[in-house]
Length: 172
Image 1 (cartoon, rainbow, N blue to C red):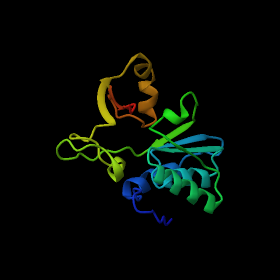
Image 2: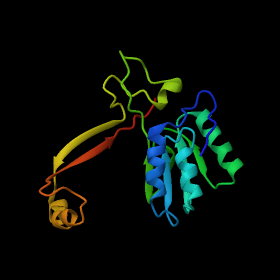
Image 3: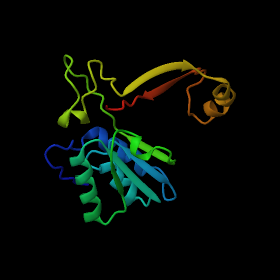
């Protein structure tokens, strides 16, 4: 799969292709898929190419939105492309699958996230949009633990889970 990405739009790299491979393993033919921070549109196009029932792509960059829209049209793939910050353009809508490759690269100093850097700059600690927390299993997961362990979905005796918290900031 070759993507020509215009200057100013984050070009797909290994992390994008890792997510694309995971997406290819999913049965998404009846799914409504959302690609948050679509960038070049790579993941949205993979989902549409796999026959997802609906694909919506969102990006804060007008150039990324235009590039994704054009690429989808040229490939004849039905992708709805929206401009906006994270989930704001799709507020109130439900999706079966949400894919995202949010910014996670730490930036020296207090440089503002702007321009092309929006695609990867994630503040001084790399967590401007993403924060991980490890917490003990709650009652529902504790009750499911034997089944999850038997299926190999958690390690034997595992009692904690890692949560990912995505934070959106409204621009004023």
